[in-house]
Picture 1: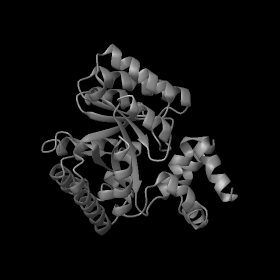
Picture 2: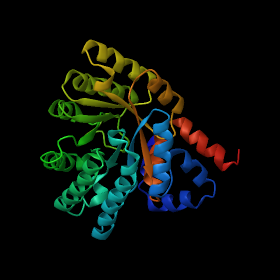
Picture 3: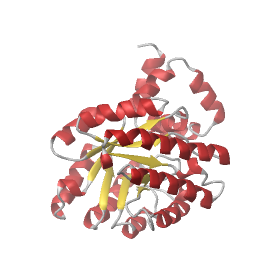
Picture 4: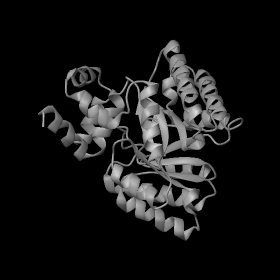
Length: 303
């Protein structure tokens, strides 16, 4: 129930203003967001890669309905990639893009053009792009844009959300590709998505099995020890080496586990968000784990 309320609040303008106005909020946001500028993001990237981790960087923003704002988001990604280039990290530092941030709701062709520009800048930097997945109404459009991008940028990845009923079939279609598998962080109706945690977990394992048995590159987005253990079991079953898949975890969450997995030889990619449009992302992180909500409430009390 709490998670559903927080997901609803993530798209509520009144809740946005109320939460953003709370003075302690910024302290909590800093746990989950690397900063507001590209420079802040690069600083976080340096720290994480020096610790043996890899990264994917997200310029925060979504549901843009203004062509100028969409162009500015694409420009921000190109500037970020230009700033990353001198570090020589190659694919140790990629970027994640929400198509709604580059105009998907306005015009699919516009979003594709902006995404092409970002993919070209990533290629020049020696790295690649993963498309984030948003609510269920955008899935077909996102996969259509993905197919178009892969004509010129075949390594472009995409996120698939296991809680959607359609995701097992999508995983089969994408089993030869770079796919980030996540549980799903949007409030979806029972007509299109599993609702209980147990159902979502089972769906995640079914999707994971499809990806690990395929010929692509699974990116296992989880902080769950049980799912990590299942991943390792499936890797053994299908003869996968550690460099044929990776784990992905969120910035600021289970950093000890990130470092332990990397220390054991696994590839661990940290999802690093930055930017001033942090509210929707922040509320979804609170919705995912009760511990995050408790951390927020303690901060509001000044403890």
